[in-house]
Image (cartoon, rainbow, N blue to C red; front, side, top):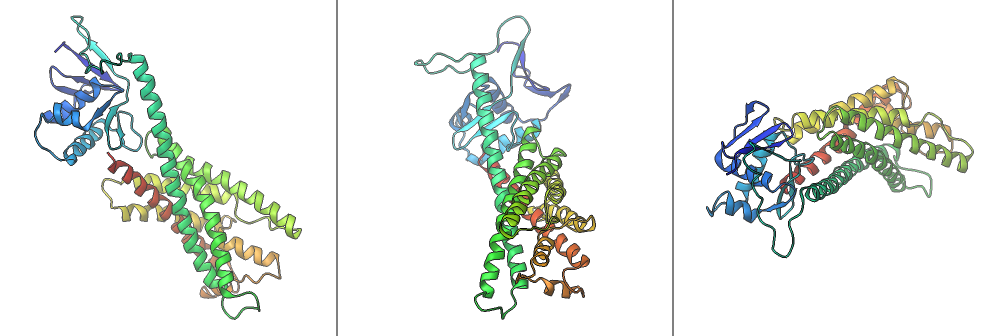
Length: 378
C-alpha cells in the first residue's frame, strides 16, 4: 500500500501502520473495525453496501447484521459521532453506510492516494469535488428528515399531554347536572379538543426549535435550551395574538393575561433543558429516568410561571370564565382541593407544575423514542 495516511476532522487513519489517532492520541479499535473504517474512508462520499462489508471486512465469515451494526456503533462512539446528526458515518437505511466527512490523503511524496474501488464500466468515476457535493447534498437531506422526524415526534408527544390535561380539566369543569342542552360530554369534548389543539401547536414550536438547534450544533446541548425558548416564544406570541383577536372579534373583549410569549419561552426553555439532560444521560439512564428528568425541568418552569405573574392552560381557562360571566366553565372544584375559593394562587402553582411536567415529559420522551428508532435503522 502507498505510504501515507487519511486525514479527516481531527483524526488520522494510517492504513499501513494500522492505526487511528485522535490528534496525537491513539484510538482503540480492533482489526475488523479498523478495516471497516478504512473501507468507509477510502470510499468517501460513496455508498458502501452491507455486502461489501461482509466480503471485504469479514471476508466471507458468516455473521449476522447485528455484527455490522455493532461495528458501526463502535466506530461512531470512538469518533464522537451521532447517528441522529452524523458528521462522519451516515446510514442509508436498508442499504449500507456512507462516510460524509471531507477526507484528505497525506502521502510521503512517493505516490498518490490508494484508489477507491472501481466504478462500473458504464459510468466514469466521479471527481472528488462531485463526490463532496453529492455527500453534502445527501447530508442536508438527511438532516432535514431528522429535524422533521424529531419535531413531529415532539409535536405528537405534546398533543398527548394536551389530551390528558383536557380530560382532567374537562372532568373537573363538567360536574353534572348542567343546563339543558349543555351536557357534560359536550363540555369534556370541547375542552379536550381545545387543550389538545393548543398543546400540538405549542409542542410543534418547541420540538422543532430543539431539533433544529441540536442538528445545527451536531448534538443536543445547551443550544437546545435556546431553541426551545425561541420556538415556545414564537408560537406563544402568535397563538395569543390570534386568540385575543378572535375573542375581540366575536365577543367585543378579551382577557389580556392569557398564556402567551412569556409562558411559551419559559416552558420551551425548560423543555430544551430537559432534552439536554436526557441526552447527556442517555447512555447511563433508562428512558424512564430521562423522561423523569425532562418532566422535572418542565414542572419547575410550570410552577414558576404563576409565581412570576403568568398563566398556563388552567389559569387561562379560569380567566376566560371570569371574563365572560355567562360562561358555564367552572374550575372551582380544583381550587376546593387546595382549600381555595376559585382557582387561587396555590391552585395555579400546583396545576402549572403538573402541566409543565406532563408537557416536558411527553415532548422529550417522544423525541427520544424517535431518535432511538432512527439509530436502530443503522
